[in-house]
Amino acid sequence: ASTTVETTGSGSPIGRALVGWSWSLASAPVGSAAVLVPAGTTAELEVDVAGAYRVEVVATDEDGRDSPPCVAAATAVPHDLVVELTWDQPGDDLDLHLLAPGGVFGTALDCYFANCGVAAPSPVDWGVPGVAIDDPLLEADDAVGTGPERTRLRRATPGTYTIVVYDFGTDPGILATQATVDVYVSGLLAGSITRTLLFDGVQHTFATVELPAGLVTEIPPAP
Image 1: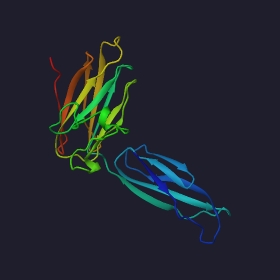
Image 2 (image 1 turned 45 degrees about the vertical axis):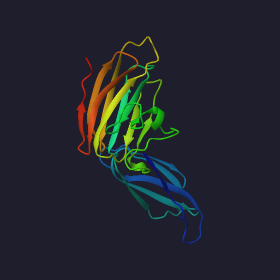
Image 3 (image 1 turned 120 degrees about the vertical axis):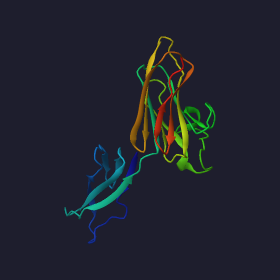
Image 4 (image 1 turned 30 degrees about the horizontal axis):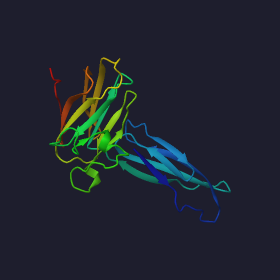
């Protein structure tokens, strides 16, 4: 996720023009590899770990004088649930489906490419009607490579969610694909399941996730 930090309204107390801005990431959570991308009076911060971040900027005026550091602080809050799908065969189109509690495959309670992507014409509305924070989003979709496909749910309604992988299949020469589903609950890896998919046009139920408990239960493949 990213956030933009701006220096809107900055100026010199003695009326000199500001000509430069020096940005730095002063602190980040342990394990973070966050990237700060300066662009003049703004900077884009790409955060990767939940926790507190501090960005500093020093302005320079036309006489070469530097300002004291100005600090902006932000806290990244993890999503309740993130599900990521990858696979090993380019050209074998796998689709990630996340079903809400009581949801049925292919309906409005199933988040997938047709109704849940960034550009979906009619996004799904889960939980409280008209409230976006409890709605899922397929934020990464891949039809030609090896993934990832990624669905996130920022604030989940309590219940049991189901993870399904549909092997759409586009290349008859691919006889088997190894697929991996990683499940993150509140920013932490709660489960990882890998299995081999042999047939196109088949729904493969990988796991259920109980929220807010975060319990991931693998569903054995059908015999």
